[in-house]
Length: 89
Image (tube, rainbow, N blue to C red; front, side):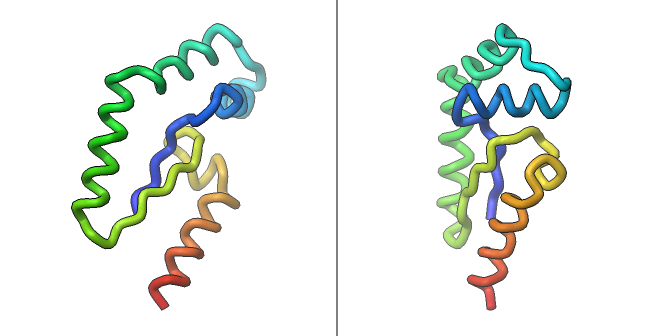
């Protein structure tokens, strides 16, 4: 399993900013979200997806958060890991 952490919506960015800073700067939120929509970022995501596919038995999962996914969204992280373990058994 390869877990990515890309923001999928503007609300994902707002949620991250609120968690991290205790407030949302709309200008910063918009800037960060637009960054995820750039061609460079999309190309990066495409390469990650191709890499996962090349491994053969690798699932790509996205949990919109920061780099500390397991701390930031522990329930979602645990759910994905539990699904992986369930498939291995």
